[in-house]
Length: 88
Image (cartoon, rainbow, N blue to C red):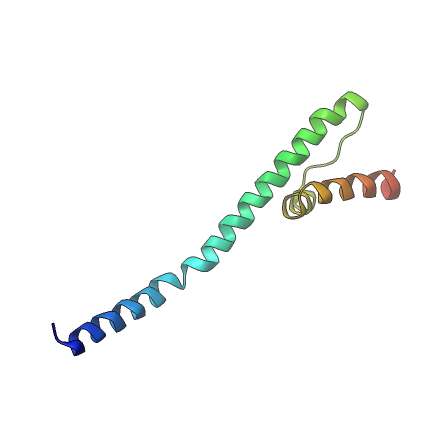
């Protein structure tokens, strides 16, 4: 094969990957965000299941699921402290 053909094919492949790969990144971010929201909702569910033995519950909504999902256990602890200190 001639070098011009190889360089043209590589250039076309790079261009194709740029065109096809560009829309995939925002979808990946949306997917990761949705997974984190689900994990946060599960953390809140288990907190409410365990807290029901002590008469404690924390509402499961979009904000609390986002905080506990994106921040993890420290976010869940912060929500509990905020609920106990500020709201109650």
